[in-house]
Length: 305
Image 1 (cartoon, rainbow, N blue to C red):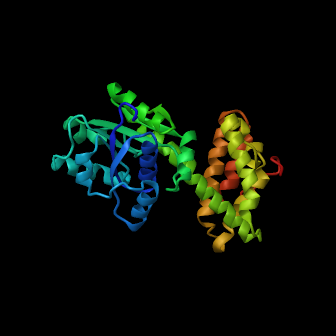
Image 2: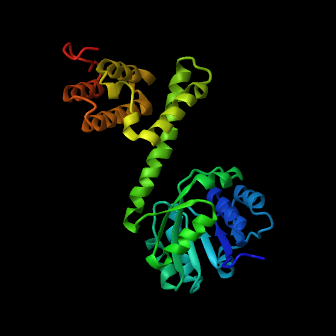
Image 3: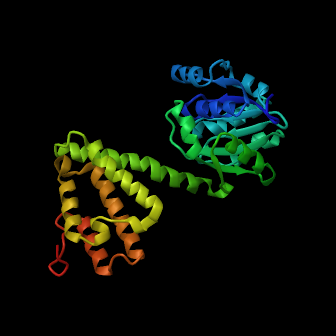
């Protein structure tokens, strides 16, 4: 016997996120009534994660669904919502949820104007678009934004998918998303840059060398915050920082490229944060700043190596 309150769910966007969340809602005994999938990859993903669910046109999905999940790119969300509003597609009482991290429910104003219920449900997770994501959802948080009266609906849907709802205010959505992008996306860039440097010095399997170090660093940072900070900047080792920046400047014929830019920016930020927390003396911060500013900006005699 089906659980009470089960909904007919329509998925618009069978990308990695939409297909996985559709499968999670289906596992919670909601009925997925249709999915919109344009590319060959999205159609194949829908067939694997949502077997038996018909692939339909967008407007037909909206007509059939009690819950419409909009899992489309950020820049496509507004035009899609407005376009469907012009067609008179949104229905009173219908639940419309998007998965964008950047936006709250303001972008769903045409949905509210039609008498439907707008929700923002953003999973704070990277997706592969495969079934293993369903297991990862169990450790995942969702940034949830909704009108106060509708917040329990948003929270219940997230809980049913096995995840943890965290309420984010409408005006905080952009900073919320920036925090996640800064931590996740830029970590991938840093790992790629570190791997490139190790290959340049003859390390055949940089992932084997970096794996234990980075996993320990991440676990320590999550457990202890900035108390886990270590390395030459945090120790005030001006000579080492100067040597690093000089070596990186010599890459690519002296340009250093994006690796140098990232190292300098992160070293400066690390020095500022370490200084503000009393981990570095002012003269150490000044020495590190000089070491990062230009070639040959190493320690002065009084600073030492």
